[in-house]
Length: 420
Image 1 (cartoon, helix red, strand yellow):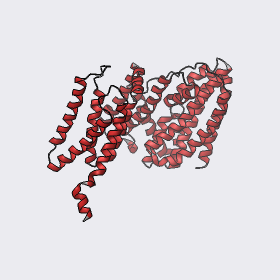
Image 2 (cartoon, helix red, strand yellow):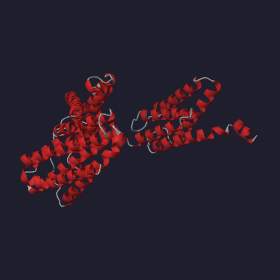
Image 3 (tube, helix red, strand yellow):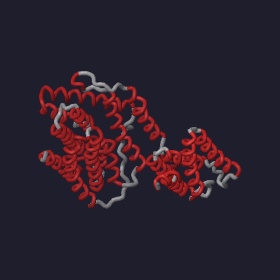
Image 4 (spheres, helix red, strand yellow):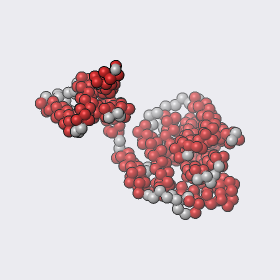
């Protein structure tokens, strides 16, 4: 009987209206802080409640027009408020209008039992409104090159990728255009993040960040640049060594991220190996960094745009070739042949053989141990190649500073392999 009275009174809908009220207050709280805004706490709270109420009434009478009419009324009211009483800053109020209409829609969304989605969108909306100065600062700092990089990445991801067939072709079923281009998008995305961040941060945060971001874009390019500058002085040699070591340690983290995205089942095996290499390397690098006391300007690594179509095609071709040869040689020569491919291809590019090993593991052509060993050998081979660059370009002084860190990373990876 009490339950029937509860339903007849409509009290069971109270939690939905309370959720709408909370959303309205959250967005309104941010708008209340803006003197130029024509809507604040009370307006946003009432609009959110109105959205839920309009959705409820529309569902009761079986017509969506009440909900649509309410949306239009809210829009006309707030636009009229700005037209009849313009602000001193001549703010057209488009942001507030959009936020108010979104608040109404979120209130309606709650009625249709999408409370979690509505709350998430409300938090995102409030965040966007609150960080207006920071977002404006980012847009002003974007150069034409940054915008071109972002647009090229969008072309790679949303224009080229969807039209490629997701089907295996060729011997060993290794050629899958969609899957190959997915790897191109993944590598381009990781590299683009570092590429843009590297040019935004410039020289302001010193060697640690330059090493981290340089490694995210290209540890080989970073090594090449700082090997050249390591000959300037002993202090510069120490700074260059820190940047080079950190960029190589980022490669270990990068390989773990690739495994987590492409083949999560291998991560439990790969993570201890990469983690020990990272831990051993960081200990040596931090010890060297603590002995440095310099604030001199550092050179920027000269890296190419990772999202250029030619660069993307080159990596896609390299990945496809390495994938085929890895499957072929593994089939005719066993794991020993694969390890030879890993050592050779790892000299110049770790990503291709890493992704190839992950792909073959997913196709059940490699065991987990074989995939981890191949990836680790590629990393060790790449370190040997970069150390060669340091010796021949940077000289013996820089090589002495780098050697301990490289040996530590190699020892860590080796210990991890022994523990497999």
